[in-house]
Structures are given as structure tokens and as C-alpha cells.
Length: 227
Ligand code: UDP
Ligand code: MG
Image (cartoon, rainbow, N blue to C red; front, side):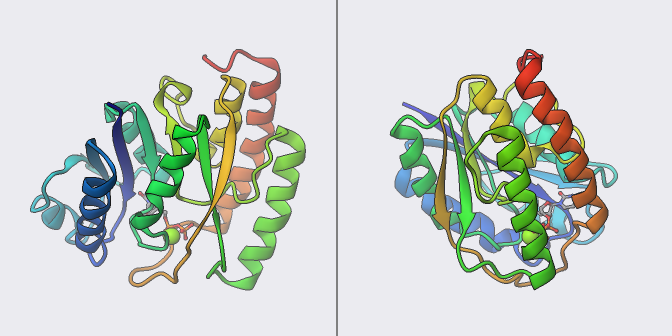
């Protein structure tokens, strides 16, 4: 019996986490024998923590101060006990109901599954930037993924455990999974407008992500990806 861990980084998302949790429980109870939901509250200053404490079942990690999405995911991966680890953003831009599609791919032999946002609801400048970045990433990493930045991804745990996340590396983590032997697959997923709150990812993060791409390409090609 495979256990699923869903890891969600959460920063000032008081308006969405209750609905997100409810939809996650419904989806996971229907698809999976064994699961856990891990929220990493990344130093939120709104009512996120107070609300999260009322949600069950939930594994909650809380940072005293805001660290960023990457350290939040890193802590969530360390905590996750599942054989399969799913990443999902807290803002409901992706639908929790799409998770079974990714799990289906895993059961077909994929070690990493990346969502591909259909009908993307982001500003045009961001979508164009992303198309170019994805093209360069495909070339450099040799991983045929069209939407590295999608927040919805699933991995067999052994392909990402014990890899310390830095920079914005979660975006290109499929390359590490591949270097560790995973078959990397992608699957179309829905994408919605942010219902509430604001995007916390700045352009500078994207630039950092671009520089991180070079580092990860180097690790995946020339170094031991288990270190
Ligand atoms: N996030 C976080 N810490 C941060 C910034 C973001 O945990 O410092 C979380 C956020 O709550 C969301 C996810 O990371 O669940 C992605 O952030 P956001 O939706 O703002 O990014 P975008 O979708 O605009 O790229
Ligand atoms: Mg978002």
C-alpha cells in the first residue's frame, strides 16, 4: 500500500487554506488508502496559522519568520513520510482534484510527474517569460517538460529525498529525479486565477531561478545527484 504525502508551502493564504484542505481530504480519501497533508506555514502574518490549527487531518510545520517557498518545501519534504510526495501551492490556482491524474502516471511507471497548466491564467509578460525559460531549460537539462514552473508535481519519494533544496531549485527538481533514474512525465492540469491574496513570487525570484538552472544542469550532468 503506497502512502501519499501532499506538501503545501503556505504564506499568508488565510482565505484559501480551509477550502484547499477540504478539497484535498475529499480527493485523497477517494483515491488513496493512505495519505497525509503537510502544510508548511512560512511565517505568515495573517490568520493562516490560527486557521491551520483547526484543520484535521494535518501535519503542520510553522516557521517563526518568512523564509521563502523553497525552504518551506524543503522542510515539508523532510517531514513527509509518504512513498509518493506531491507538491501543491496553497492558492488554489491548481486544483487538488487533479492529483489522481499525477498518481495514475506514477502507477504507470513514472518517477516524476509535472503538471502542465492548460489555459494559463497569468499576465501575458509572465507567460511569455515562462515559455522562453522552459525552452532553455529543456535544452540545458534534456528533460522534456513544458511547464517546469507548475506548482503541481508528484515524485516517488526516493528520487527527491536527501536532496537539499536551494535557490528556486524546486522548479528544476525533475532534472535531479531524472539524474537519479526517474522517468519524467507530464500531464495536463487546470489553472485558475488567484481567488484571493497576491502572488508572492517576484521577478527577482525568476532571475534567481534562471541562474539556478545552470547549477542544476551541471549537477545533473557531471556530479553525483545523490549528494
Ligand atoms: N509561498 C511561501 N513562501 C513565500 C512565498 C510563497 O510559502 O515566501 C507559497 C505560497 O503561499 C504558495 C506558493 O508558495 O502556496 C507559491 O506562491 P505564489 O502563489 O505567490 O506564486 P505564483 O503562483 O504567483 O508563482
Ligand atoms: Mg500561485
